[in-house]
Amino acid sequence: MDLTNQIKDIVLFQGVSLEKVQWLATQATYKKFKSGEIVISEADPIRSFYVVTSGQLKLYRSSMEGKEQTLQLLGPGDPFGLCTAFATESFPASAMAIVESSVILIPGMVMEATARQEPVIFFNIIQILSQRLKDSMTLIESLALKEIPGRLASFLCHLLPKETVDKKTSVELTVSQRELAKILGATPEALSRALRKMANDGILTTAGRVITIHDHKALEQLAEGE
Image (cartoon, rainbow, N blue to C red):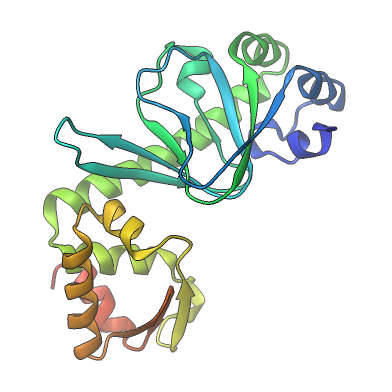
């Protein structure tokens, strides 16, 4: 498989010369994963850079008691494993395919050598990590300071386009409600109760993975803890 076109469209490699992109394609490995299959586990001795090319993955941490917290969802074009490519030799989280997915792996030494010759990669990395830091801070704030309805409201507000405010809007979840519960740090039962309560209050309705927002103002107030 020719990976050149897939690699050149990745945000991390925007601005990199075509010659280097073509070279990276020769060094990359393409892998497929079935739904529920582990891509990498916490503390795996791996030093590679990864990028999702199709499907969806989740990054998560597990406690010794078996409790799981989803940290981030990754879709096509999303890179991960930057720390293993440039710094550490172990991954700080596990990555699992939620649906059938494909991933490109690039050895860390190859990434390092390319970045030294194409400094734009470092600027792209800073932008990606800055956004992920912001997302992580939002997640930490939500888990620490908000009850489950507030966490759910914040999550839904984040999904809604700005221009749809005050309009009846439907969004389709890319994950099951069980997976959504893990993102919110809740049990599936607690999430179901929160959805029922918000439906009874006229804030939203659900139909499978489709959630329709009827009262944007009430949703925002709930997200803000009011």
